[in-house]
Structure formats: C-alpha cells, structure tokens
Image (tube, rainbow, N blue to C red; front, side, top):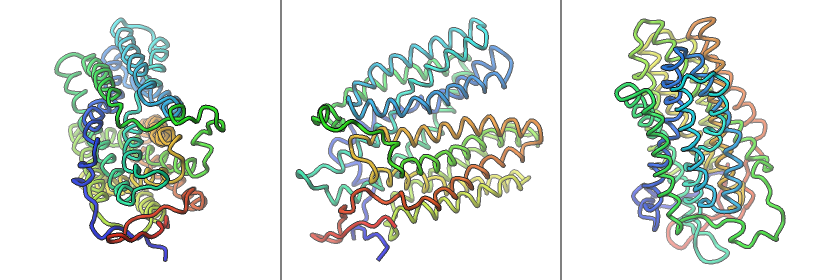
Length: 434
C-alpha cells in the first residue's frame, strides 16, 4: 500500500516545541536568521541612495546573492565536519566586517567595482542559521537508544519542517519591513548596520547553544573513516536543488514583476500589499502543513504540490488586474510552502547525518541562486516589454523544475528503507515515500 501510516494522535506544534532543548536554539536562531532577509533590501536602498540607480543597486545585491548560493554549501560541509560552532563563530565576524566595509565604501562614493568586490565576502559569509536549525531538529528528534530512531521523533519531522518554513516566511515578511523602515526613517545605511549587528549578536548566542549541536564528523570519530562525501553527490539532493531553483525563480520573479506592475498602474504603494498577500499564502500553507496528518507519502506530496505551483505560476503573466493578481498570488503562495516543506523532509531521508547541514544549505542556496537569476532576467524583461513579461520567469522556472522532478522522481527514494513510524501505541510499520 502506497500511503504513509501516521500516528493516530496528530503531532502538533505544541508537542514539537515541548521537545527538550528546542527553545534553547529556536529563540537565538530566530534572531540570527533575521538578517538573511534584510541584506538584499538593505543593499538596494543604500546603493540606490548613493548612486541614484536601481540598476546598480540591484547588480550589487545580485552579486551578494550569487556569492551566498555558491559558498553556503561549503560552509554547510564544514559545519558537518567540524561542528556548527566552529564555522559560525568566524563566519559572523567575517560577515559583520564585510557588510561594514560595504557600507563604508558606498557612503564614500566608491566605484562600482569596489562595491562588487565587497559584496562577494558579504554574501559568501552569510551565516546559514536556517539549515543549522533544521539540522538540530533532525538530530534531537532522531535521538533514542543506540541503533534505533524514535518513531515519535520521526512523526514530528514533517511538523518541524513546516515550523521552519513558517519561520522562514515570517522572517521574509519582518526583515524587509524592518530594513526599509530603518533606511527611510533613520539613515540609508541603518538597515545594513542593523543587519550586521543582528548577525553578530544572534549568531554568537546561537553558537553558544552547544548542547543541541548535531554531532559532527570529527567528534563522531569519522576523521579516519572513509573520505567525507559531498551531499551533492547524492542524486536526490541534486534533483531537489533543481526544484528549489524553480521556487527561487518564483520569489525573484514576483518581487520584480509586482514592483513593475504597481508602477505601471500608477499605484506603487500597492506593491507591498500584493507581495504581502503572496507571503501570507505561503505562511498559511506552512501552518496547515504542520497541522495535517497526511495519508500520502512525501514524494507524492511534492509532485502534487509542485504541479499546483507550476500551474498557478504559469497564469501570472496573463493577469492585468490588481485584485485578480493578488488573489492568484495568494494561491501561488499556498503551493510554495508544501513544496519547500516536503523537499526539506525528503532530503533528511536521502543523506546521512554527517552531511545533513550541507544538504540543507544546498537547497537554501538553490533558492537564493534562483532568486538572484530571476531578479535579473525578470527586470530586463519588464524594462523591455512591460511588467507582465517578467512573470514569464516563474512560469519557465517552475515548469522546467517540475519536468525534472517527474523524470527523476526515482532518485527521491530514501537511502534507508527500514525507517518506521508509529501507529497507535506499541505498533510500527515501514514508512513509504510514495
């Protein structure tokens, strides 16, 4: 039978948050991940103020996004091998210094090449707190007696993935608003200064929570074992990375195209409302995903959810009314969270614990890379042919990713077929990913 059997008592957020040790890393982790959503908008507002060009500002921000996407997985690999604390402590120091340098150069009227150079380490050193939190959830929910995983913990993994998706989306709602308010109400550099400060303070507090840090390669005695394999060597991780590139194309395409659309209709202020509705759909779906007891496996959920995402994203270019675009954006958001949450749930079954943080950072980096590329392409299309053509980027990105998922779905089977989950009290059955 293809359906997944879940526990008779539906695991909820309350049960998840009562997990021993959870709050000790969730609170500082929430503060430390806020800068992730503040960096791009902070750069755009500061560089636009100093250069007078949105094009220049977007280019510097894109360099930061690409740099983060390329270097984040390497940081995840180092965290899996040497521990999160060993990577996070120097990382937050480098990031704070790099962002401070970027601020100083922008305010001094430095040439664009200098801003591009400063943007590279600023993006490369963005602390990957979200993937690190996900890795901690996977570690503490899987702890039990030696050689056996907890059925209760396994049943909470999808809830944890949903909780993290909601937290990420909440971050992307609060972070840009905070950065914009600081840049427009205090000083154009205030958003980046706050970003660097939160990164440093939140990162240090998060790194101090050593008790929930997942075991790493050296601590687990793997230094002399077989060479560490990259998580990207797992075919399923590569398939999911392509799917997450498509999701990034939706984020980037929506940001640029909604801005262009709002300006075209002569109501630029509605941009925030339209994007907020889109983000609200994502958050609502994320909350629901963690509260529902699913009777179908994650692989099938991913295919169904991504199909819905591709269909709804493909309709965006044809809508020319603000109310209709808001309604359709809400539906698009409703399909994003299931795809993200299920992807993170699946990747936990594909890679060993020694490569888990790296795997999560590949997915997060794929979203950032897709977003950076979509911002560039959608902006050029909107400038040349109008706002509606910018929405062709989410169409192309999601359709190509869906085709890849369908063709290579066999790679998403878990590496360990012996996983179990609870059924009632004292009963266990194998988990199916279909």
